[in-house]
Length: 210
Length: 114
Image (cartoon, rainbow over all chains, first blue to last red; front, side, top):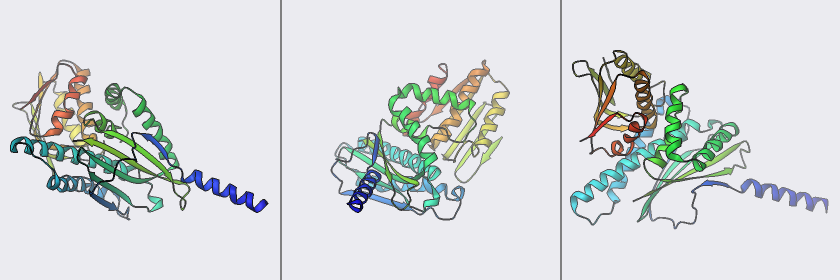
């Protein structure tokens, strides 16, 4: 009897750990797309400073790759303008998401970082996955709370004004510009990791309407 | 005053009080942007009537770069007496999306997208 109770308790604990926490516009019920591209990064031993330009290179590659598939049945010049606009948005959004993932990733876990770009008929969806330690996660979740509950237009200006006083490196503008200037929907999923209980995996989902 | 790398260049022309930005600015944070911040501060310290920022060939700017420019705009606003004109390009989509925010920081900032 005692053993059974213990087992039951253990099972419940495991279930709780496996339960993901969702914040913002994280939509798992969308049909998966036929066309997608995934790039994975091993954290490696090279300092981030030396790997930094890989963020921009990867973002530009995603944008170029996408342009090949980009459907268009309008007049050529309109189609060309639209393609330029979408490429530029992909390049910006992917670069910001990768910069964040690389900056805040918990490297003790040695878990890979990944970016997936899904192409749907009406939108593009980005999924970026990285690891977070407990301290970074608490800070990130409180920032997310501010992002999803504030008037974003006002938060944007407030953030810019605050940054003048603040000499710290992070500007807090990446996600804000993605939401504000690119009108994207953003959501997050936090999952516990059974092998590394002190580390969470965060998946950031960004939906960009076409 | 000028800063040139493989990825970008920032050049100040005293005759026209114009700072010309070219290429792709995606540095990792405030420390990496310090040289450009310094160049812009030196231009602002001369307190000209108007500073021109020519961004027509600036293809990419990350959010840390937006932060650098917005800090500059706020500092010039606080200093008073000096105006800012930004020349951008309609052909570079991020400029149409993000540059208008600088006008909200400094309402008399002149923004020309050509």
